[in-house]
Image: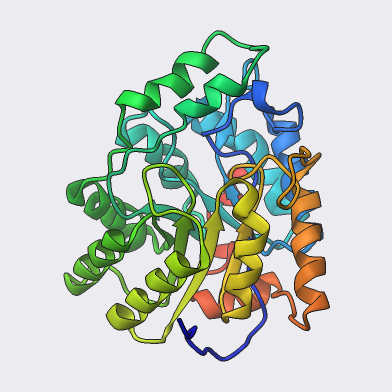
Length: 321
């Protein structure tokens, strides 16, 4: 298939620092404490990530949490030490209520949050078979529980988030689409007039329960997005595991952007070697992209292209004092 042609611009790099799908027993490098999350984010920004996507974990055992008090232990240091765009999850983790998923974003009113475009069977249960030494009691049932669980994002849920964050607080979204059908969900919600401003779509490939990784699937999603939204949107790719680097590079060559980070892959490139930090992954994809003649977007460039309200319009300056 002939790939779509897009004007080549600087590449916006997102780094997803810790997420909620991996457990501490999978890697000693997964950041858990607020201090670790803050430092990992700062280092990733220094390597070229203009967007930092953030989840929180309980400092004692690494269990995902939506507690705003935990977020407030790492958000102010990141805000004060970098110019990066802070992007807070609204997906949270399995078992969280919608209010728990939104609590930190409501408090902080960040420039950007993620927004998942549909309910899916997020399947991480196979990871449990690869772990021999468990560090915490919660980890095995957490992973195995995804065999009979769903990641719930109904139209009612999505519309509630759009009203609570975008319409009330001016927050823009990273629209996360795990399959082609979720692009149609997004188009439906846009037709209802629930969102105004530039679109930033995260095409997610390689997660069990969503579309598989591969260039054909990426092109299919991109072509579908272009039919639905024209050419005036920004898009990025989130590719799980060993697909992270090659799919990110492919997408950048198509004119898009890329997301890396330990939330999405615990390894370096396509190898089985554990990444020792988020910054390693940012540095690696940056080096590859620059070797191909591409440039990396600054936070200022990313803000302009994504139509963000600006860091001074968040509540972090006030809350961080």
